[in-house]
Length: 303
Image 1 (cartoon, rainbow, N blue to C red):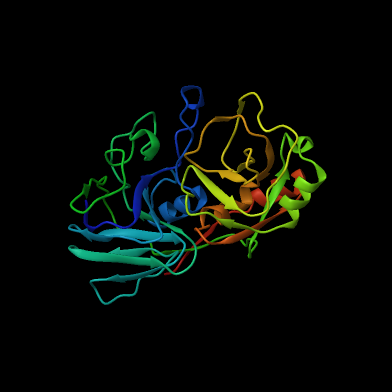
Image 2: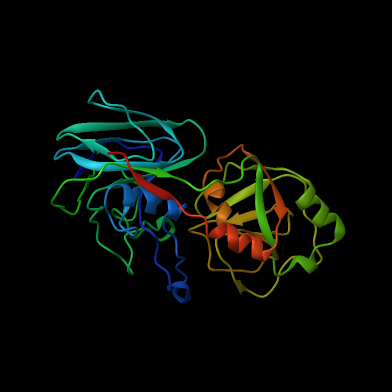
């Protein structure tokens, strides 16, 4: 069990999502960086798809009455524990019974993921334990955690191996790599020049449904199209010309033209964008994008 002594800004139970529900209007959702959650799970001996916590910008105080084996991946937050040991990222951590883990603010980036050996045992909905906030289901009561919540965990026998994880090398700086979108031809030269030649600021209304960008208007010939299927990472341009990168809890269909799509290898960078960050875009080829998507986290023993 995990007891929530103080909730963070937005602490959500997440696993790898609920694919196959698009016909019902339900996106895959799940962790914003599924590889980071899967790595945290591997560090504690779980299956990759076990449910953990996605913590955004400012974290919670969590008490572990029976202790536990945990791991943190993603953005580094200020962190402490009631014992004297340090709190390390990308490593197996063993907490004593009654120990408290305190996560403060993200030092850089936006999100981190916490896995607990055994996984969080909330009730699955549509085949997933992930929280889908827009509809208020999944996760823990369909919402972000609050002080006083108690999260059930699956019991696991046996000890834990001490492991360390190494994320794949990724691009840095304010640039997301993209593939051309299906409606690139609807954008005029000035619109394409604005999108690919400018930097945009992440707007304050950004959330898991979409990253809203503020900057030079991207002009296009048709402002609306018949509804089409869309996926996370697709970059839509509404009539005001301000691009929106669709997020993990975003719509499954859309009527705005899609100028580009963020490649899978850069989804971890997308997951770490916070309001006020500046971002630009660069195109790459499909073969290069597929090769980059093959990079994986590496796990090694520390003992």
